[in-house]
Image (cartoon, rainbow, N blue to C red; front, top):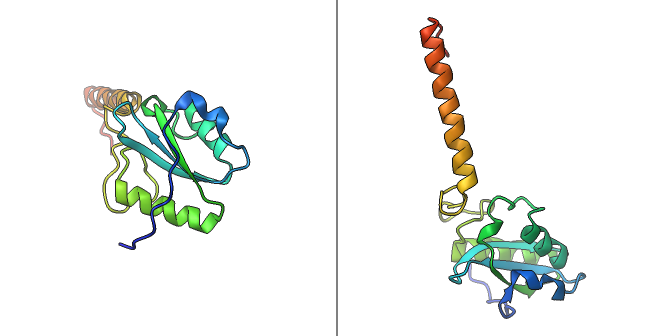
Amino acid sequence: MIMLQELSLSEFYNVGDYHDLDKYSSGLYFFYNDDNELMYVGNSEHLLSRVRGHITGNEHTGDVKHNFKKYRFAILEDAVDRDIYETWYINLWKPALNTAKVFTYYTQRFERQYNPAYVKRKEEQEKEMYELKCRAIENNLYLI
């Protein structure tokens, strides 16, 4: 694994305090749960809008946003540097909810403790498939 110089991270902020971010700042952001466990790492050219999007559920993390209680950030203007550092931090610190750029561990994003809605949908789909198979057998049909 490559070694990079650690970035200077901000202090912890509650997720409701995202309005204090400069809307023109670029960098990395780090979401934590109530126990200060790192849950998610991301990067953005516009930190304010991205952090706000994750917190309000307008991003792809809407199903797990309830795990985000605090955040930190690091200013990093260069897009290539942001991408490299994001990938490095994801695989160094192994946040539970990242799915992209995960190379050295398995994500926990789809586990019941972090994403009960996903697990419920999956169980409902499996039940529906089981019921379809039972009806097919009753009618002497076979599903391929």
